[in-house]
Image 1 (cartoon, protein in one colour):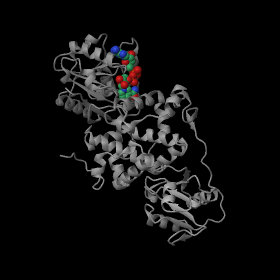
Image 2 (tube, protein in one colour):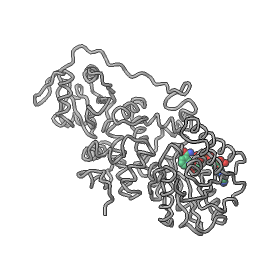
Image 3 (cartoon, helix red, strand yellow):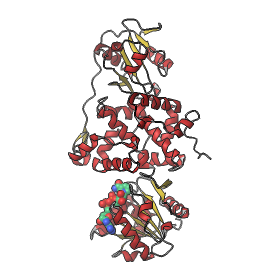
Image 4 (cartoon, protein in one colour):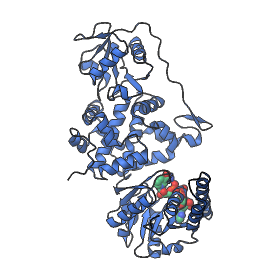
Length: 507
Ligand code: NAI
């Protein structure tokens, strides 16, 4: 094992985060001193970390000698003053600016002049925490994720006065602890909590418009894009008492930036105590820890399916024709649909109603299909009705697209379907992070895949679905909703033609 970059590390606050950081620091070979104001917190932390190591020994993944040595390196500190010999102190106490400022003021008087002080804050400004310090250049943010040993990414955050060498040292130490460091500017939410704003907020907005219920939205995003958890499953897991205040805080810190506008849905659920899995009741109800998910609407029994006519302006038109052929549909190829035809449109960003009106189609027979993503690459097809769509046409479309056994969701009309809206919002926020130079595009991709578990980094996601398509969705969503939240970031506009994941910074 290499000599650790920081030989003696103090951890202040030995709750969920502090103990996780202590574990990986001791594993990296550092002597770790634990301090907490709660009398039994240190013993609990040592017991819990010790038990983790015992389990690794049982599984044969750690030798008994190594476990004993690691336990030996994890030491209690009776008073803050005992941290005097530390060359790094990491704080993971209560998330309050005044309490953290006071703690670091005290620590600065205790540790040596060369020691680095770091905060694990997830939502406070690193610059603000370090503002009153005599040596703010020695202070940085070091933001880990829960559970620390499993979430292998850490954001190294430079405040206005932080010496860049301090962040480099923290990054080097992160690697020794088996983590991947990313460098973030001191901006609200840093990288991960900023980039994560798109998924849940856009999904909430779709629910609030009555376009689809939350279970349908979860199914669509998991099956079409490959997210491991739907946004509402994720809300339930994180719990709204954690995630709603984060949404509000980032929105306010960005001076009411419309892209981050929180939802009244989560505000009300939080007020009502319906916060998620930990209380057994969230968007889903939980029985013995398992979510109770209502069955999907069955495929309607339909006798004859009418002939199908596809709009000349449909996205992926050739692919849609091939799909219809494969499904055994009777396809009309005339200039306009016959009076019996089921009429399909496939807009990007626009709503089905607008397209039907602009293209002079009979709305009663018109449905939309989301063709943003290649049909072969998805496990679900999504259709949208408009307010005039006849139920026989809706059922016929549903039955037709389910013929090969692929799942089908039918949602109500909205600009941009579910996937288009959510993907475009995620990509746009990511582009804006690059525009603001919060971090490098490479670190953004790393932070999001490791910190949020998305199937792809947001820039790679934009490239996969086509930067021009994403831009088209956003331009049209802006027209449909007149809402600046869909305003494309200038960074996205500039990269729209050339691709987003050119992983280098602009000169
Ligand atoms: P926690 O409540 O599990 O642990 C906090 C510990 O700090 C407690 O043991 C408490 O007794 C101790 N403490 C409070 N004030 C203290 C003081 N003045 N001096 C010494 N000890 C003090 O909290 P958790 O979840 O570990 O969070 C700690 C910090 O990490 C917060 O700043 C939080 O925002 C941040 N964070 C939390 C994440 C999470 O998912 N829980 C993720 C990333 C960051």
